Image 1: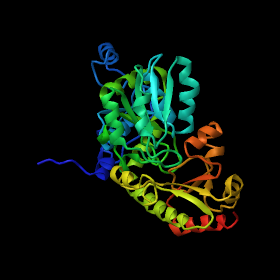
Image 2 (image 1 turned 120 degrees about the vertical axis):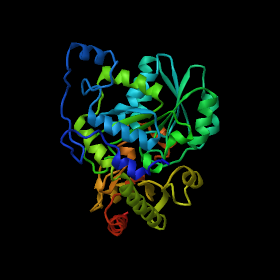
Image 3 (image 1 turned 45 degrees about the vertical axis):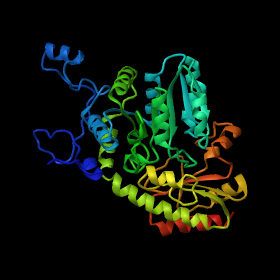
Length: 391
């Protein structure tokens, strides 16, 4: 009697077929193109009568292996891999939307995605209506006759708010909308949005999937009919993931489970420490009982992720003092690295947003985002403690 493998097994054992050399670890296929046996083979391949590699802008054995793993881990029918997470976001929307279409989105989204919605898509007469994270009841009032997509992040960046994916999935189904989730903060290890009704799931693989701050990458996985449209768009516009980065990311997936377990363990301890500190006004972490959506996070997620958001008392100047006195934590705009990272969203990742828009999404001037890494948690906390002494 057959059974499904566990997550960690699929992440390790989903590989391309071995070559005649019988290698144990997947080889790199650093080639821009592939040859054909004869003219008929070439014709049939371009006519898609055969499923085979033609050109690495279309497919490559390494990118295919990465996509196959992501699909298996997310429970998706199909997928496509991109050079970056934002390439995945843009290509997904560009492939599925037409001029005059409309998007309904949570207001709490990544800064570059917000810029895409407000600056670039309007060039093609594609507009976006926003709802606040805590106002899901308002979604249906925003849906128009031309609304095509419902889009959210959960957990959100950077305020780690949680949205009810099952409720959103029901709304999308009722109104025949394409339901798209950015699952970057959770990874497929902690959360599978397709189980809750998502049609497509987007990842910035640059973050926890790589996990070591080495390469860029992205992926969109989900319904085969939608991925087909995304593939055709991407095949002709060129945002494909490189074979080398795909090889790195596929290997990284092999250790995703054990890494994320430790990330989450460390992050919870960091959040608990910050919650007791006299110079910290607010702490948000999905698996803290004080989080407004704690029960929902426990329902949807295996663990709370590696991102902790908190506000230093004293506003922006106090936040700067804290950041300037960190000794071990890196100051970087990335997250999901083995190394713990501190970011000031108001002046970096979300700096292009107006102050009003930042406040609408819970990003105060003093908000700090910590991407908790894999250093010993005692050392992470010690660095945070000594830096807070200067606030």
